[in-house]
Image 1 (tube, rainbow, N blue to C red):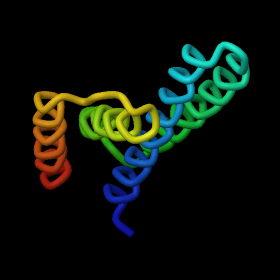
Image 2 (cartoon, rainbow, N blue to C red; image 1 turned 90 degrees about the horizontal axis):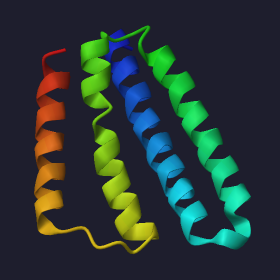
Image 3 (cartoon, one colour; image 1 turned 90 degrees about the vertical axis):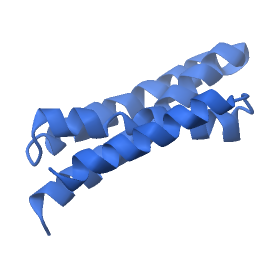
Length: 110
């Protein structure tokens, strides 16, 4: 497997972990009764994300990895809409689309 592809897949997995971690932290603000549990889960996922991102840097240039990590905005928008039932306005969905286009261009020429 191509090292660039491995790095991109690792960073994409990082964006999933970051999105999940952010959702857990948001849940800690909503549910006071289980705040510590949600914070602990959020910290665990964000720690996994940072560790995996460091590994991805072995395969990618920082400029590419950091650009691909902008997919975390897409992940958080999708998860907050789906799991937290937050309203995501059309303007933000347009931004998500632009992030997807921009990230695709960066990966295509990495």
